[in-house]
Amino acid sequence: MNRIILHVDLDSFYASVEEFRKPGIKGKPIIICIYSGRTKDSGAVSSANYKARDLGIRSGMPIIFAKRLAKKKRAIFLPADRPYYQSVSQRIMDILEKEADAFQQVSVDEAYLDVSETTGGDWEKAIKIAKSIKKKIKEREKLTCSVGIGPNKLVAKMASKNMKPDGLTLVKTPEVRNFLNPLEVSKLHGIGRVTSFILEELGIKTIKDLAEFKVASIEEKLGKNKAKMLQERAIGIDNSTVEEQEAKQISRIGTLKKDSRDIDEIFKKIKELAKDLEKRIESRKVSFRTISLITIDTTLDIQTRSETIEQTQKLVPMISITKELLKDFLEENKYKQLRRVGVRVSNLIYRKKQRTLGDF
DNA sequence: CGACGTGTAAC
DNA sequence: CCTTTTACACGTCG
Image 1: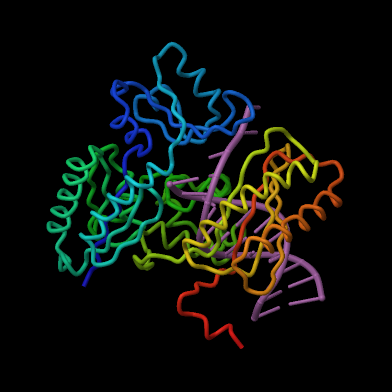
Image 2: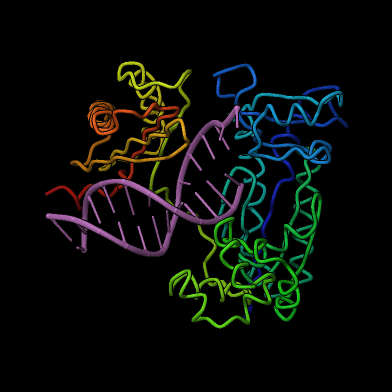
């Protein structure tokens, strides 16, 4: 029997949450920002509602750029309140999960629902579920979402992007090729800036071009695995299952008040970040074996240094090892100033049950 | 093969 | 002028 997957995407989520929460800003351009704290307007745009997007404002853009675009437009700039958005998200995810045979939250504002069993493969039933979900989210949280329905996660994801905001798009199995074919390759999920540039150099513009292109030529540029994966995706094939994934790494990164190579200065920031990480490690009941230092220098070049140790869950080794890694880094990079630093733990071991295996 | 570092991508 | 967090693939080294 054919699978039926829904992809639910909350529309400009952060901005929409604030639009409902803060009185008097409805109807205006709203821009949610992550301030780095270096200067008054340093930082990046995290989310912008459609009024703001009309002005050319996009997420990821420096706040200062967005302010220029919004000049004299009565736009509202707000700092991101992520704990609050997280709590709203959780309530919505609870609604979604109840509708699905299998459920996978992929980010704070997106989830996949496998409804193959419930619908018995009937697309009309899937549409009913989608409409009912949209209604509930609207009633309970005053938010709109865009839903894509398809035979797998890839197609559902592409379908949800088809109509926004407040959209609903169904792409049945026989319609998949016609739906994907005319889209630009850069629109295919998994193809970003670099890959689309490479493909366009080969003369590949649309997803149809990609699907029909000689695999050997793509392999030359992107390697065997990626070439195969992309050509499968181009014809809408995706066999991945809808299921919650355990985190494989947890990290925290932050921006220094000013560029620095002063170990004490930098280490102060690292301790803050590590303490925050420890909270999350504790709440998720994990141990870890690998600790990484992440450095971002003034040219925005990213480097990582890591070390693997015996399984632990404690703050102390996390901090002391990161400090060693930082010392080494500074010694080996005498002329680099750091702009941002981060700490990451990986090689995670989920405790609670798995004690016996590693305990000999 | 495990560990480590980088690049790409998505949010 | 330039945020945050995570995943995964790949190359290299011992």
